[in-house]
Amino acid sequence: MENTMDLQDMLNMLGQIYEKQMPFHRLLGIRIVNLTPDDVRVRIDMREELIGNFARRILHGGVISAVLDLTGGLIAFAELMTHLGAMPLDELTKRFARASTIDMRVDYLRRGEGEYFIASGSVLRRGNKVTVVRTELTNDKNLLIAAGTGTYLII
Image 1 (cartoon, rainbow, N blue to C red):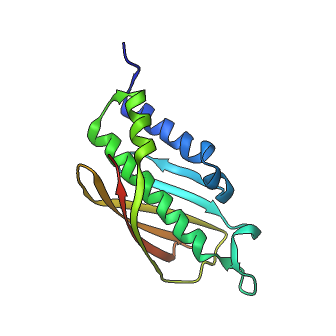
Image 2 (cartoon, one colour):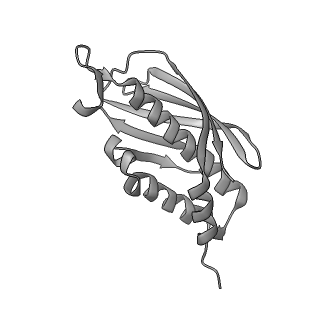
């Protein structure tokens, strides 16, 4: 008998992987605020190590793009899980290992000022192999800091 997981179990496991098992995500201090098929939100808190402009004490643009990228990948993979439904754990693991970013664009709209930042987004289009996601990063005052569009391989 195969070890098949239901959707919520798969999403919970995905959240644990993103927060705890990915070294770069730990370095950024990623915390998943919500992870459901309809609502994915990720938070990072401002820290000294994430400052890009020491005079203005604002979030580094590379951190912004990285958070938008990893959030877009999380959204794309959550969409895939929702579409496929329950699946064996080994199949889920294989798909996760093959997932990657194909292309990404970020528009920086405001300085990265804030105590914390929330990234969220939605699927624009899901295909059989590729998913396109729109992401946004807001600060603690709910001001839009940056927006991105990413294309993710999800085979």
